[in-house]
Image 1: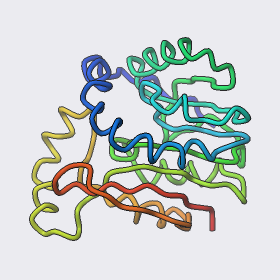
Image 2: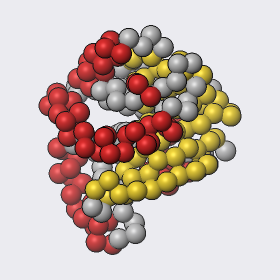
Image 3: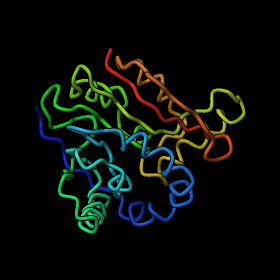
Length: 209
């Protein structure tokens, strides 16, 4: 198992993340995070923890390892974790495509608004599948390409090159639900909503096939 290279990170994106995402977090986080993080007990891996918005939602019996490739994001996550005083959460700098863990290490893998920006979705989901135990769950919250509207889907495709530059690698047009299923994870349940005009978001639970 190789040791993932450290990423340079996005200083200003990390500095602005909590502010730019505050409206969506207030509107949707209290509904979604209790179902995605709040029902994850045992050994848990969170991928792309960002600044740690999920920390307060984990149950007391969850033993969480939270990874984040961006050094500026993880610095802010450390500060948030110290403020909460939660000793059941460990932070590590690592990327989703190269998880530094043995096969079948976790009861649950959790991700929120992450797989839009991983370098390689197929590799990242293969790693999720690898580290999950046979009866484990992958618990997700992601935004996806709008395939219900030709107009909005085309808009997402058109803005992706610029959006990636401003959004620290974010691709607004990824078909992430299909990528989950292609990785050998069966969707147990999924719900969809619109957080912004023309932009669908999904959250749900999948299990290894």
